[in-house]
Image (cartoon, rainbow over all chains, first blue to last red; front, side, top):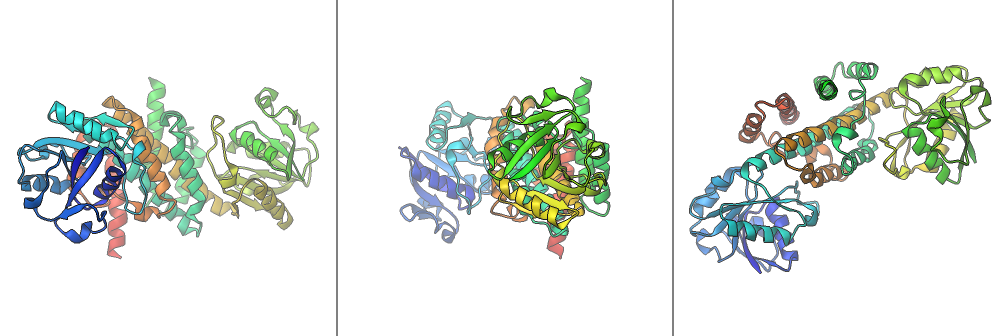
Length: 256
Length: 256
């Protein structure tokens, strides 16, 4: 049984807590947060504290707080030589305080409180400064997910950057589509099946091969029509640049 | 029973043919294509021709060919006063020849031969120059889909433009993510659960509310880190511009 103290009250802490609770091999012995009200929604059976002096004994201390607070929180620890990990995609492991053994336990997913999470599919990226801690993090990862990968801080940076692109930037394009339809009083629902199919397609086909559309086939007539439609729109520049990028991607590769 | 002649051998013709075959209310009586080899994969039971003089009697003639060929194919028809529709998102209805009654039957989805299609969820956008033809197209749409909407040519243009953004541009971002990982020998599989969640999230949450990430929360430190990571990358410009667009989207709306 791996004993865990969770630090933080955000979405990652919330969903990790659920996942550890559902696993037979892990036990969250305590949740720490500066304001106790924020962790009131966590299971009643788990001890809660807002005091660093009252942190319980555990095998792993998981800091699931905002990126900017990771360093400070780890410095505030009164414990020594414990395994203390953070859950952030963009924070280097070395950011953690030298007082304790360091590690990272980064679940590569976007969490919101309102949506259920199936951890079994979520890649858990682990890193540790000591070999035996890495082994423990692997076991911890496998207790909630089928996909545990060892990723160092450099690789994790790259992974987080890519995640921003396929999650945040993609969602922004959904917004653009939604806004363009709204201007004509058309429902965004019309695009939902297409959005779903686009995302599911790349599970079996690499995105380079899945690419279709006017830019991919260099269909200048349709591109011109679209730019004309967007002539007074703030999205004209975005359309032109994305189109140019796709044209470049394929022409560059054709020339090789 | 609605009798249909299908013109074309591409993905749309292929999947429409399957859908009509599975419906009790429709019958594809013939498939036309200039080269018969290309329609050899279509069901054996359906008559095939490559001659305009041999087109059969039908209630609807569906032209499912490339955008550029719609006009020419409809001009080549020897029949008169029939209901002739195309399936294109970006071609105006008036592009069809005046010899016949005009209409549009546009299934809003991205089709590939290798992927199965569930038509019941796909929005079918219909338009016709005559009221009774519009009614027939609605019935035809309902025979294969639960979602049939009347959309005029102007609206359809806008819809197609938005579809390009949430399908082609989004898939391009998947490529960018994949390429960035490849440079570090990281597997694109790591991003697939995130891609899926991002697409599924907007089924219950408007994309404006679903937006997260460094640009949304104006996290300059992370943005700088990412731009630094991309300093020699062709994707640096794209990252900067998407970030700027998201910042603008939210700051503009905050100022209102």
